[in-house]
Length: 272
Image (cartoon, rainbow, N blue to C red; front, side):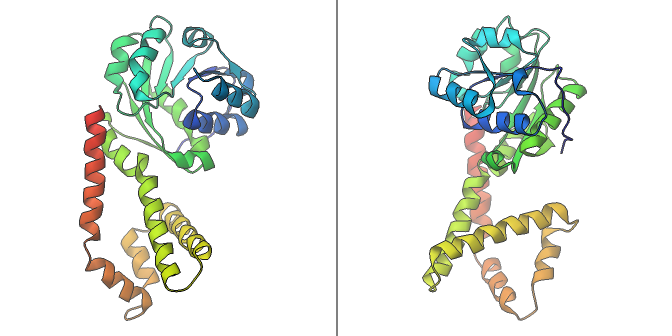
């Protein structure tokens, strides 16, 4: 995980001002990582641009080319199906610049094929970035330098945690952390519904389930213990937790989760 630093020497431009771009913009501006006067945004949606301006006091640009010419770092935060159009407009405007892509399924080599003189880093973020608990995986393109990776690490640490991975593994990352929040929401909801069926109101059950998930995850991340060790710590032999553990061990849940992650990974790979 990176260390927050304030780097007012760099100007950062966002192509796309939607939810993920806004989460990153909000994190780096509100944390003091960068002054809002050094942040620029472009979006085909006037409403999205208006939101970025009102919420974070950033500059707006009239075109992708004008934005790129105004900044040192370009963040491409658009949907992947418009990648070719965006890259075409960026062509000739990113020489010597750092380009950060959060487009799912678009490889660094595809970006570099168009932006030949740019240094490219690909990022796979997730939606908990909205509450500064995001997980961002970073992989470097062929021309990216260590100092570029350090900069992106520091930048994205303002919205959660970061990890560096090989691009060959990015589809696994997509399945675990990119799509993963949806899977955890499903499990949290089903545990809450189980409690509701037994007579406790759903709102209380959902709070119990969600907070327990949050606390359990935090213990894993902050205590130097394995999941197995933490399971043992909360389980009394012959007790309540042991009975629940036995249900899980004797179920098909491991195979179901294996299939969930593999099928999601396969879909991410197909998109690429």
